[in-house]
Image 1 (cartoon, rainbow, N blue to C red):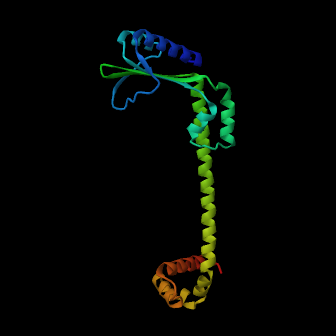
Image 2 (image 1 turned 90 degrees about the vertical axis):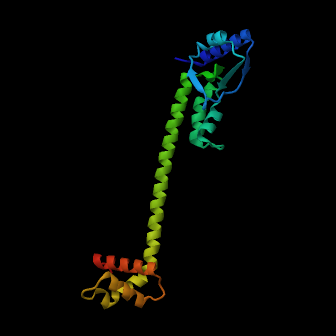
Image 3 (image 1 turned 30 degrees about the vertical axis):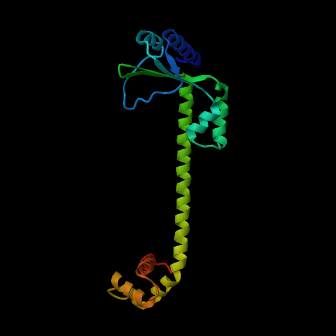
Length: 216
């Protein structure tokens, strides 16, 4: 298990090793996207420094702040009750070392390590679970709202076309022998010259469905 005290010890041992070698310690992270890199155990890093004797060492010791961590994870400046609750739960860890990032260059190769306190991993897992739960809730709410909007739109459509459907189905030619969709559309065009083709199709489809269902 790795605790905050272990990270503090590693950081101090790295500081001492750097001091012995006359290396400068930079509080920044060395980008490794385009570099050859190898992982080094945190406890091995001081010995590596003494062996390689680099001129520069990169070291970042992250101090935990529950409010900042929650805000950063969820990218929200104004946390709601769920996020405040999460931050409050983890507030006792404030000020403790959460993560230690170390790096140095040797022969064009980045030697680095990222050591994380076990409890910080637990915090990240809990934050991820909350994020997933919130995402599921958001999707469910969106779907309910979408269904409600679709139902509202359908009601408005039905109300809008109801007079046209009533007039069309009342015409005896609509239910005449050997009637077809094309003939019903032609009839609708004659009865409702003010409607465009799309609207006419909606009226004919609704009238046809209503007639099939036996509705009045």
